[in-house]
Image (tube, rainbow, N blue to C red; front, top):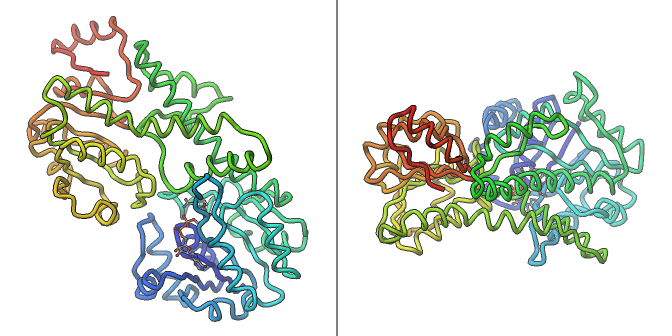
Length: 453
Ligand SMILES: NC(=O)c1ccc[n+]([C@@H]2O[C@H](COP(=O)([O-])OP(=O)(O)OC[C@H]3O[C@@H](n4cnc5c(N)ncnc54)[C@H](O)[C@@H]3O)[C@@H](O)[C@H]2O)c1
């Protein structure tokens, strides 16, 4: 099949490369000339594990092309995927202007038998509106569920492939295209467009709700002496609950959860009612993004405050295995600490370039090449993004390089007992420790226990 993917971002490029991999001829179209020029030279515009080799191989095999020319992309195309952004408007609702502009440009160029597939996350009713606008072309929706950082694997072995269509023939055309990704067992769910569109928002909102629930609970854990990481294990063992997405931390970020939670609520408001749960999910997340800053402020309050302190930040991207900085929890933290007079030593395995463009030439930011450099003369270290390589750090070496002993674990990655044994003053999220447990630890380790809430 000849496929065009409109929008060559995290979703579009993965979609294009994976469809090319199974033998289709794919043209990726974008309005961003720099991005397309980079791709034409075999350079990826962002980091996504496993994507580079797929893009390069398929480009070399002549199955994957990149263009800014809509005519070239639409030439003899059988199927086109719309994967343009649907960012939030000020009121939280989805901004469909990218989609509208793309459709306006492409409408006269789309061959009459082509299937139009809406892959962008868009409010309920969008597929039907597009179908009216593009009539008599067949339009179906196919919301994407890939996760940045694992996008190629998610696309090739998805939990489900969702097709929202009224027309069986159109749905079957898309099913055929997805057949190579649904070999081992049927992963394709077909339903009406409204339900498919809603399912995408509902899934992201549910995941965000679980995170905010745990973050909210973590505050109570801290106050009561419970440890949220242990509470999670007990909760997750219940098969009705499961272990996934029960992590307390520094809040969720990225381009999807915040925008989709708000867009779902905006959809409800447009129908005349509120969804207070979603409002709380978002408010808890906003509050959580301030929490590390508050903990750092409280820790240094008796020692002259944050002003003049050096703080090392481990991880900048909104999550591991991506260089995406959109709504990253590191950003509000960095801004707060800089405003309060701290010098920050920063390191992320892949997001440094993107972070530098966002944070400009702030003189109090020192860009480091690795974890050891981050620790140099630092009064405190803060883990913000839980990259795998941060899991097994050489803690004695880091501590030796540091001026202070504080370690703020924004993702609850480390066992408290071990961190205390190393000599850190450990501050996690929601890791209250009962007085009896503290006493036992002191007795068994023979060292002073330093755990701060
Ligand atoms: N990023 C994710 O993890 C993810 C996962 C599932 C769904 N989604 C949804 O997929 C959609 C795309 O997200 P993304 O993260 O890939 O966005 P992105 O910002 O990474 O990429 C979008 C691309 O579309 C291009 N574009 C904008 N207008 C265009 C036009 N008229 N013609 C051609 N190209 C155009 C932009 O230049 C950009 O390169 C959004 O609706 C998002 O909610 C994203």
